[in-house]
Length: 233
Image (cartoon, rainbow, N blue to C red):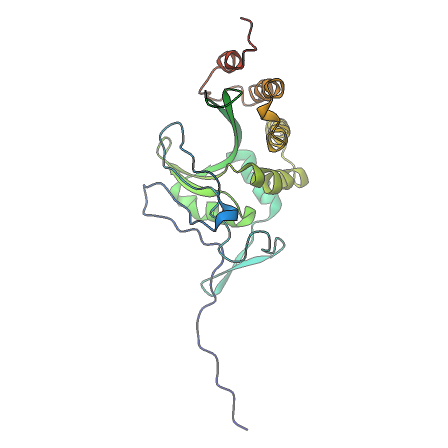
């Protein structure tokens, strides 16, 4: 019997590969469509603008298999990051931050911006790309301030749907666990638009400033409360 001709030797397409520009520049991930876009934001230190939601380059994030045990890449297999490894990585190198900006055009006068990030040196850039594949949200950028690459998630929908559930299932320990608990509460308040209410925004500010007490802040707490008209001092 005649044999069926073999298929061509194309390598399987790789999934979720973030496109990164040359070294030393800001990293601008590829966009995936209107449903996956976040507002473009600018870092207070003047770092590169980026769109956080350059996500899964295969199916839509909602349809991507969360339980896949490996990722196809250039004809080989790459192990999916273990969930507990992700938690351990964030324990040492991750940050949960809530930043505020004064915005006179807003009714409450203060903009609230929660974010989650993990920083690594250039030598561990591939690790950040794998973390990006794991969560299937956020983006990678280069930070000129400390010369590191950062995986960062700013979309409140992605924070609530993807980041919080991971750390609630695979919890952190120590002080970072306490910060995460406060961060999760703030994210859910912002997701419910409670930050648009002055009383609830005051609660968010107080809660935020009890996190990372040694961290740098753009504005003192008293300045934000004064902008709300709540500070009597």
